[in-house]
Image 1 (tube, rainbow over the protein chains, first blue to last red):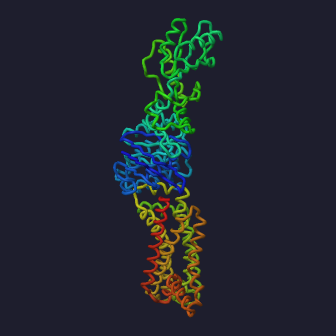
Image 2 (cartoon, chains in turn cyan, purple):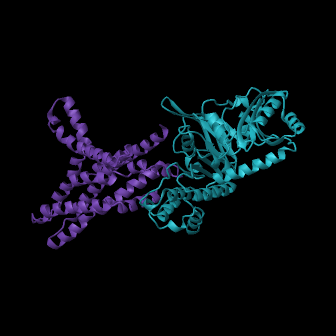
Image 3 (cartoon, each protein chain N blue to C red):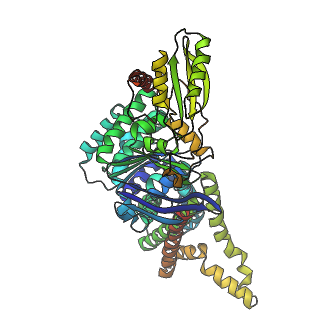
Length: 374
Length: 239
């Protein structure tokens, strides 16, 4: 549906977007993620034909945006970062203007009514945009983009300024739209991207730093030779902690063990690092079974999208070439996982031991909690 | 184009610019009509039309100042430039909206003619000639104003710069008046400046000469500056 080839934008000597290529299939929801000034909006402006590219090609449904702009633009609904609203018009007048501007042929009244209902604007249709709050303005901007049912929707930070319940409503709407439209949206709210998008492109310094689903991206940069264990000892005292840590150290393949904080009463977490070649999970499980300890949790270093994002954008960056040999020589991830407020990007999908069942349940729980806190 | 035209017409009235423009235009032209024609006991409207040149010159920047500068400032141009329309549609939609308002304003002369009709015999042919001269003069000025408006984000800057440009064009003739009998270089300068002059072309009409070349000149200026405006918008996209 959308094809971008070697897109570059230079402002004088400053390169805003450098050689970006990607493809979006029909019915896909693509998320653009990146720090401020990474080139998200510039890319979107180029996709919609607002600015031109220095070099490269953009095909919207096979139509080049610079060669046949009218035809290509007719296929795009665009919500820019700042919605292009004429503040001295009423919502109705503005939407009618956009309807005319886009040369929409759909039945006017029914189409606009439908769009207003979808964007929850029915109550404010006769109010002047100047007097509307930021959230309503944002929704008018979204409504404007939906006029004429464009097959491609490009939304630059669509949920900015909305209250939490509206955010959820708009997200649901975008998800729904994703079934019939191809959607590209940018956001700096990571859970949002994860909740809505099928695929994520992380842009950093004008380049595509990562491309894929959250899971894929995480897998590519995660170092699988690190894990967190929560083991319950017999006595629930710091004695346990020392004993268990020492015992794990004896397992072959374990490089480093550090007893971490007391997460539950008398129960500690252990950061375990392996040599990266041996899978020590079974050995540890066996050890605990022998000693009568309970593994309450086992987690491979789980990168949240946030971790990935920070990791990629803080300059440590991964180069795409590394993707293939993901098992060996991966950079270590120093970012600590906190207990709350983060979503997991990676879940262990390998065979699980019986003891892990409880851990899995825990993960589910914590995940649900996270979901609620978004 | 029609969508932009209609929106722009609406915006003139909701923003109040139309009322200010029409009120001032009609007030000042009314004063000129009263002093130049009625008080002089004549039905000759040439004096009034002659004075109207400066009124048009001063008021047109008010009409055009926010047409494109405001769009850029409020980022509403993003909506226009990503819509499936051409740049000419945008520029001409705005241009004709301003021109329409201007025509409404200057059509007041028919009210004056109607009044004169009671007081004496109106010479309709020169009146129509002057009316069209004023129309095309305005058409050229609006294109200049629209062009200046496309260069800036600031309404006031847009108004002041258009006013200055129009004023300089008006004054340039007087500056070179002494060059008419000078050396060759001076004569060339004189010829160039006078052939580009608005005022003497316009004032010709009030003397009862309907010059097609002048009409053509005004239309060319209008076209040229609209073309420049389109190029400015295009260049903004490519920079």
